[in-house]
Image (cartoon, rainbow, N blue to C red):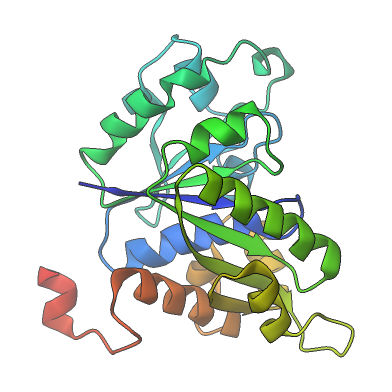
Length: 248
């Protein structure tokens, strides 16, 4: 049975989509069947990041009852599967968010992980996606406005009875003007499961329409995402041998 992870943040622009994509790609590289669902219905980016900006069937169609979720799954060249949302303005209304539980149950059958890239904020679509989560991961930048909004996200998730797996701090430079990691952890009362450094490799990966763990596997940022994936799997950073990769 697949684990459903919702990647959430209180505000946009903190690296939520980048995190969802690279976490999914990293888990896939560790021999897990992964599907990344773009649940940001109004301003979707997963398809743009992975070279599938326009596809015939999207999550929007499924939520409107026009298609089945199986028809909206597309496979990236890496083997990671995605369910994009529509970029069309015509598809921005009349969603039936009550279909999310049904969609999740279908996706659980053939995957080890279902990762939702949630919209920012706390609108109806966000609350619906949080409602189907097994675990929630909060993404923030090391600056007060982002952390303040992340705190709201933590409280909303816990208010719904959801386990907050931890916080991922992105675009970290260790500059004096950034909030210390200890302060972020204390303010959010949540463990920090990963710190992603500022790295131009992320933008280069976007230009190449792929995850940074694929385009720049030796970069610090790629290694950090793999470390987070290992934590989620309970590997605790140990090396995975050849036969373990083959036989799981």
